Structures are given as structure tokens and as C-alpha cells.
Image (cartoon, rainbow, N blue to C red):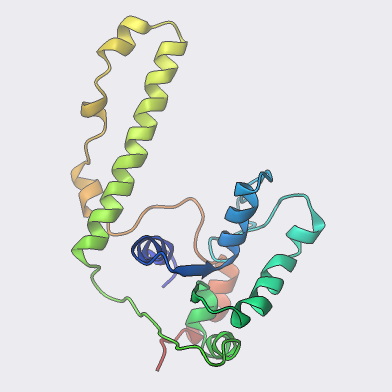
Length: 196
């Protein structure tokens, strides 16, 4: 479901299954950034994790042409694909359209509902801890930069980066950007279904 850890699960799955290639808008953005293109990022209220705005300032990228090309080319390649579309995978008609693009492929749906596994929870807590460490490093750098070196020397990184009780209770990451646009969620929620 939207905002229930879909993309975190995908990241964990891909880490364990490196033979799979993710087909999604975020993959195209990632490839473009790794190729040296500058991405402005998602602007508030204009994009979502499922369909992030391209925002490269290059019309041929921003109009989603690469995704259309990749979607047309992928079925001809002998690879394992993970099709990541939150809305598309929750709506039966869109799910069938996605599946129909891959004739001759073995198709598997993974439905993750209910209480997440301990492995998933531990991975989420590791991500939270990593973000806290990153924030503590930024704070330490600010102290050094502001010429408060004595204060920065006393700044204990380990104390600053422990998970709180509230952090340990989190099942999914809190994100600035939701998985679906509120308008899409409102229009489509009543039609969400899981695969037969």
C-alpha cells in the first residue's frame, strides 16, 4: 500500500537479488544522475515516489520518453525485471496491462501485507540510524566550521546516534514525499486490489 514501505522493500529485494533490474521512474532518474545529469529533485506537491518528476530541464527526459522506450525494449531482453509502480500494481486493469507487455516471461506477484518481518524492521532501523549518524556528522562539521573546535571535540558521535524508543517502534520510514499523489489516492483508493 502507499507509504507502507514499498520502495524500502524493493531496495532490500534488489540488494538480495542483484540479477533483477528495476523498471520504474526512479531508476531512470538514478541512471541519469549517475550519468552526470543534474536533477532538481521533487518539488513539494508536484511529484510522488511512484511517479517522481524528472525535472532535468531536458524536454526529451522530462516528458518520460526514456521510460516509454525502456518499457518497450525490456520485454525483448532476457533479464529478470521488477516492475515498481505502486498505483499500477494496485489497480487490476493497470496491473493486467503491465503484465501483458511481458509475453513469455514468468510472472510473480509479491503481496506484503500485515506485520513486516523482523529482517525488514531491522533494515528500516539501520536506515534510521544511518540518517541520524549523517545528521550528527553535519552538526559536528558545523561546529568545526564555526570555530568552536573545543566544543566539537567534546561532541560524542555515539551518544548522538542511538535509536530512541520511538525509532524502534517505527515500521516504515517517515518520508517527505508520499508514494502516491493525494489526488491519485483519492480517485483510485476504492479500486485498489491485490492480485488473484
